[in-house]
Length: 281
Image (cartoon, rainbow, N blue to C red):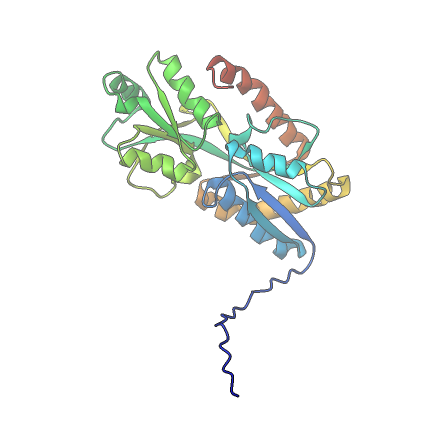
């Protein structure tokens, strides 16, 4: 007796095997891929193997203005580092469980709008008094530095301002073109090369807050590891000057002590402002 057995079709796929050579280091970013922090972290990561044979894995853990990434790094045992933007200062306050390693770059915050809307920030604020759309401002997250800049701007001008948060700077800027908001407040690198918007204010001109990018480590990381990574970050930062400049970043380097002082200074200076604007809760 013949029996025909029908076998189910099986699709075979190959799974790529990634082989890393040398020490592996995790660099965690608190924002989605494509933003200033993520691109800068990738640039630094690419420079590491050329310097010391390190393999650097960039992991994006967006959410809560960078606090989720900070919490993740705090819980790791070693070789886990946080690539933090000053945008997250108020979500990741200074503390013993997040150790500063090195400052690698600075950037300006900018306020952008449609080219035809206003040539200056003063002109924009005046126009907003009779235009509800212009009272809406966008940023890449609530309780961020950009949110603080916008809220303080309208309060100081005794004008009405409505914050509309988005998940990324790109979405915040695109909201201008879609007619949802009048302005977006973002790090300058997030709008480099865009010709469909115009800058009406920046750090040093109507904005008194500048931005920075730094690397922090879990408190479980050994002192030797932090010193080693700090030295390599200095070399990687120097090797990345041209790429950083093209992105709109100012390549700098300072050790963990200087970064810690900068982080604490920003936090202590800006937290009272945040509280005065009723943004803390």
